[in-house]
Image 1: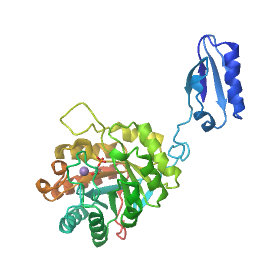
Image 2 (image 1 turned 135 degrees about the vertical axis):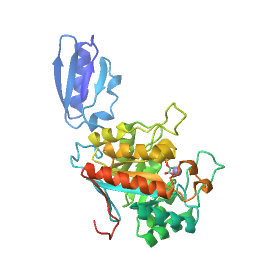
Image 3 (image 1 turned 180 degrees about the horizontal axis):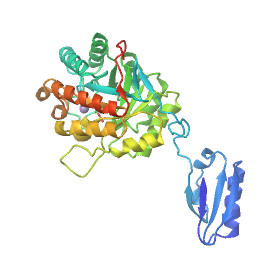
Image 4 (image 1 turned 120 degrees about the horizontal axis):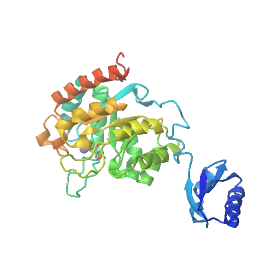
Length: 345
Ligand code: PEP
Ligand code: MN
C-alpha cells in the first residue's frame, strides 16, 4: 500500500502516519520528493485495509497495491481455474454451453427443450424453478416441483443442470438436486446468499449485477471462495445502459478484463445482455472471441407461450446454428466445447 501525503503535510503528521503503520507490525518506507512525500508500506496489506488511513491528518490518498479479492485474483493463482460441473469442464480451453428455458414450465416442455439443446451441442441444461422477477405479479417459477422436473430431465438426458437459488433457506435443497447453483444478477450482492452457497460443495454460476462493477463482481466471488468453495464461474450478462433498443449493455470488454484480473472462468449470457434474438448470436461469438469460457443461452420451443423471457428465447434451430458457429470459433482459439459426461471427447 502507498500512502500519499498532502503537499503541506507537517513532520509531525508524517511521523504520526509512520507510527500508525509500525503499530500494526508493518514497515514504513518514507520517500520525500520535491513536491510530495509518500509512505510505502511493506507487509500484509490486509492489516491496513480496515484502517481509516484517509482520516489521518495530512494524508491525501491511500493506494492499495494488491486487489482486495485475494482468492479470486490472478496473483494468488496464476493458472486459470477449471471448474468441473458433474463431469463438464469449464475453463482452461473447455467451454460450457449452457442452454434451456428461462423457467421450468412443465416436465414435457423441459424434455422437449432438453432433447433439442442436447442434440445441438449444449452440455449443461438450465431452467429456473425460483424466478426472481422484477414484478411481484409476474410468474415466480414452479418452485420445488420445477426443481424436481429439472433434476429428472437432466438425468434422463445425461446433462448436468444449473438453476438459480434466490433464498439462503433453499440453498441446501437446491444443492441436492442441481449440479450447479446460479446466483442471479439481482442477488449478486446478497452476502447472506453468497456465504450460504460458499458453504456448499457445488459449483456456483455467479452473474454480474446489472449495476455492478467488475471489482464488485470479483468481491462477490471472494465471498464464495472465502467460505471454502473454489468452484466459481462468473457470468457477464449485461449492465444497465442508456439505450432502450437492447435490454442491457453487453459489456464484452469485462470478459477480457476479468481474464487479466482473475483465474476464475467467465462465461457470457447474451440472452439477458441483449434481450433480443437477433443480437444473441453476434454477442455470443464476440464473447468467445474476447476469451469467454462458455455461453449461456435461453432456448424455448415455443417462445410465444413462454412464461418468462419468451421475447429473448432462441428457437432450437437457431440455437443449433449458433452452437455450430461457437464450435468453429472455439477451434480457431485452440479451445473446444466440453463433452457431456460419458461422451467421447
Ligand atoms: C436468468 O438466468 O433467468 C436470470 C434471471 O438471469 P439474470 O439474473 O442475469 O437476470
Ligand atoms: Mn431469463
